[in-house]
Image (cartoon, rainbow, N blue to C red; front, top):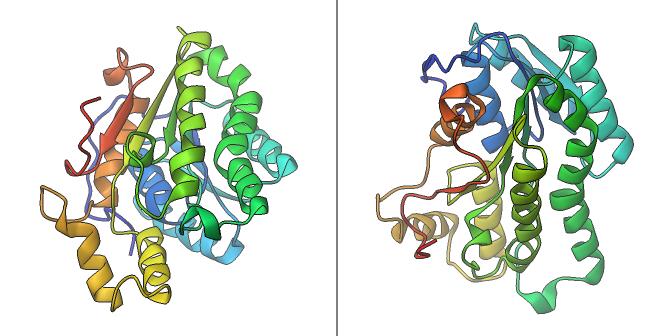
Length: 271
């Protein structure tokens, strides 16, 4: 089911603009793309599975907002990233909003993570953003645009069993903060830091916990993710998508260089 399928337009004054949203055939990237489409934004979505991507494009197009184009591509392949940007520019004449998302790295303790996985995770989470911004920046600066990076609350607090996310995602926040000054005033750069949301990523992590014997069952593992969240439940991807769309809008014109937790209050960090 489409995340946030019951959502409505918020009249964010971004109708007729264009966006590239990566890793958007499912999960939080898909929710961000859906929120933008509802606002009348023309969106290029991305994923590695053509059939899944095409199905998502059909769902988003049915929302009746902006145009949707599906472009298959691997975020670890520099040529695919360049093609993503070129496809967006060719279709829409430029790029107004860049929303970066990527699949999460494997979970597990430090001693179980092979060296090569560190390089792959850095390529997936950090270099994908570097390459995307490198190619998209001239178009974003040309008309004044926005960058929103979807990362994780692990950049504020280390999460048990997620050493790769804890260590590597912090580089994305350092990049985002630097871009918020170097590309200003034409471009604003912000990040959202999701806590546990009910997505395929959480299901994958719970299944890995079951396989390692850390929880007795899938149901118990899913409940464990929600039990410490003060609001009492996992996040709805549509809410995160709405925040991304807001950050792309002129209503957020004074929000720049921010890293915004969307975690139901589960984080204990003061900053």
